[in-house]
Image 1: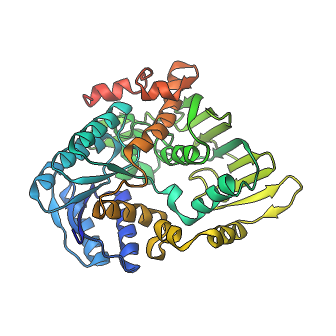
Image 2 (image 1 turned 60 degrees about the horizontal axis):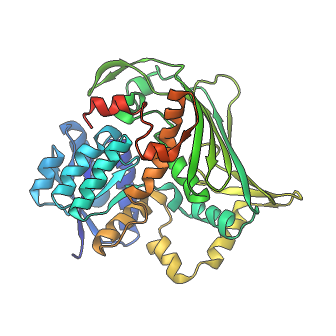
Image 3 (image 1 turned 120 degrees about the horizontal axis):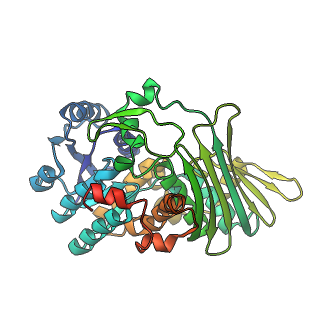
Length: 402
């Protein structure tokens, strides 16, 4: 196979980020793929996206109305699945069963059971399922992970604290009239609110930095409950959290405090900081995707090391082979890198850097927040993975017959 015949499945907002990633790769001279297919059950969305593909990549991909139609066409080799969370398993599995390679957006499956269905199908077909988890791949996140874990610039990590408080009106037109937000505000479509959306990135990076999470204790609130008009579910009230407070205990003893609210009028707070025995590392991005924007270090004696210096030191210690493996063709954009990793894994029949098995534990940490809030007690993440604790997920599984 000289080029991967690639399809994008689902043509909403995140698919545009992926398309931009493929354009970055193409502009950098990478030619390991051709965008051969588009799939969406909305003719209008699909046609609009096809026009963008032609504008950015100069190709006219074949269009399909369903995953099953696309999988049976023989027109593509691999699928980049950008559908809403509830449909990850129902659209990924037909592709796997047709022998196609798949990268699915995070979280891989709306519940643990949904993820297991994907994993079972992949195992049966002898396939790996890549997950579109981009945050840890960019130059800034990689530099900060190196600074904390390899260079040990803040010593032994003790604990971290994340707090984000702001006020968003989910009844406002930019949310109420936006499909991209409508499905994110209903539990049956998204699996949860930002704990599960941006929180999937956060959890992946926390585990990447600090290892497995042993236990989570949390409370959640949905202070806002505007009416949502969903094409899939009809008229419903917003039923996902807009506020949570949680404590994480890692297997190695590290502690974390993760607190967030979109229903906090007044003074805004956005901070993320990791403390070690010799200093601290403050995230420049505030409260969401850990170290995606880099970070600055303050040592115990007050001395500071700015991110620019950290990145320079990180780059200096990279050998040529590692640099090309992590940042092929000089690309340092995180979404472009997740797209490259998927395409290259298909071309070379290798394991992708981040697979469904890898993200299951991170996803379970996010789900443990919900399960703890549901039970009012601390929840072991392994119990979520094993299906011993599932009260929060049970209604979702029942609705979608998982």
